[in-house]
Length: 492
Image 1 (cartoon, helix red, strand yellow):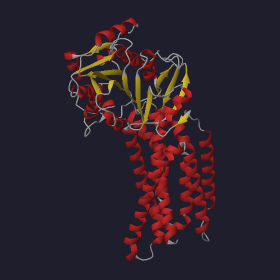
Image 2 (image 1 turned 135 degrees about the vertical axis):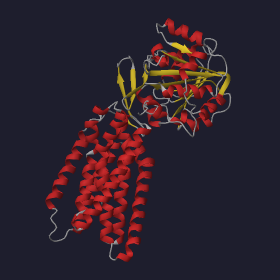
Image 3 (image 1 turned 120 degrees about the vertical axis):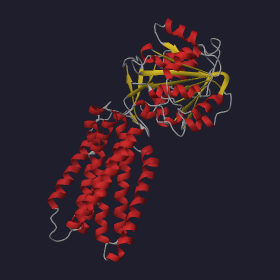
Image 4 (image 1 turned 90 degrees about the vertical axis):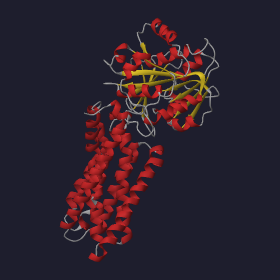
């Protein structure tokens, strides 16, 4: 094999593995969430596949002529790539809610095979390129460097271009088909007399065609696949009687386009109570919203306090487009949107600019870790007016490790902090949403709870010594140590 062709083959196989690895989080997110544990399982699984593939490929290359192995290996790798989406669609629903073990299992079922098979290509090519022992180091080093370069290109191409430009399904279809076509072409170019590969190659091609067909017809839960989420809009699903926006199978917003004052989710009702009592009734407010999704709270504020101005920091521009097209969101001078990461967007905001900051950003069930730290909270405090407040929605279960840590973090920054939630959650007997509210000024908690009670709810508030007991030994989260995912789902 000419050196250029050898390098191109190693480059392409390594790039394909990293394309699969980067796309993996998009495929698993709807079933196991988009968390640090998801990425850990994917990376570990793919690395295990690379290790086994390199070992097996080297052993096979020593026992058989690599010229008869390379084509079928690529065809099998392409076939397994095409099988990824059917595998995830078949096993994903059964593994929902299974935590870290389920994430590892689903990653292994879907991604270990193609990673291992495609990683077997490099040692086979190395064997073909070794003409003399004294050249072993330079040949192995050159092809190793080329493979690493391919992995880098595959990573950048997928993360910066493919994920934003194309849905995952056609990307994987194109990748699998390209690998199979490359394998067939390579087999025809390298076949030698006496090499018995026709029947296995035909069988693997059949598997590839089956995988392509299964990928094409595998059910999709998305109305829109954005760079970050599988997004869909459903109607009339309790507890939302309006339009529910789902991101990766989790309900994120309940929207009533014709009645923006109405809030169906209990945590939004609690924040609505705080907004209603934040200033004299009817007086407009300036609000900064960290996370947009369905824009239910910005529209509620505009309807209940005419003249209010909201700026929404939303990471996903495709969600903003979906909200405009399907949820009736109208942006303009009183409802602005900045697309990009909320942490960097917050740094751009002026001092003392807002009466209220609302935190409602999630990646899966977890608030992104860099939006939970004391450093981030200090930036929130900087943008608030002296009597302004910060209300943040968090979700936690079990021993409430994350909720308690986030309260401790807010208390390290603000003078007044409270938690509002149903009594069973505050007593650690149940999990769900908690609204944390913080300010340097006294909070209007009595007035907010009065509105809560008038609605027929029984939410309670913790402050002072009760809040001390709730926090217990909860740590303060900082930029250099904020294990949010592990606090939400502690492992034994």
